Image 1: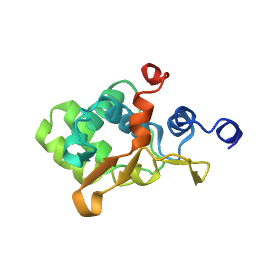
Image 2 (image 1 turned 90 degrees about the vertical axis):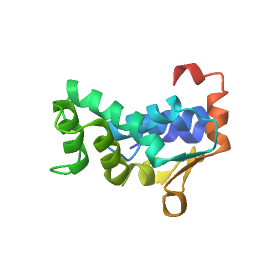
Image 3 (image 1 turned 90 degrees about the horizontal axis):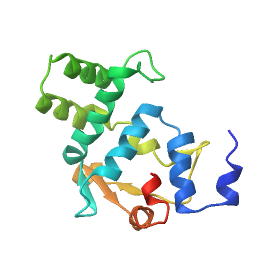
Image 4 (image 1 turned 180 degrees about the horizontal axis):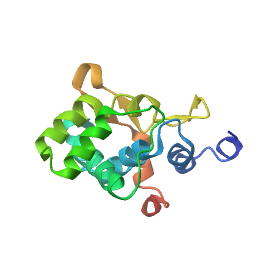
Length: 152
């Protein structure tokens, strides 16, 4: 994968777009995480997985209603729970519980990776071990205040 444009224009905006368009996650997961990050109330730099779970899972359940699964493995327990939610087999609380448990397993680790290496800017730090969440970085807030913010 050619990422020459990142090195020729290593701005915060270019890195964000690269993650979304070229990142090393399955597309539906990274789109859902990006959408959740942009839409969540950012009153604090720390966002718990529980707080992130609803907007993240809602984006995925919406996607599953109109498109098939975008996964690299043969199955996904988490996406199965999203489909169960869409069918009314589980409620919103159960979806949130399963999202916290299963939904962020790979996407948080791989979010900042493009072409097998990390982009120059990190938009959040993984705090799952200590605090069960993520911590938004200064770069994320700079992204929100950039001239391109309305385009994300």
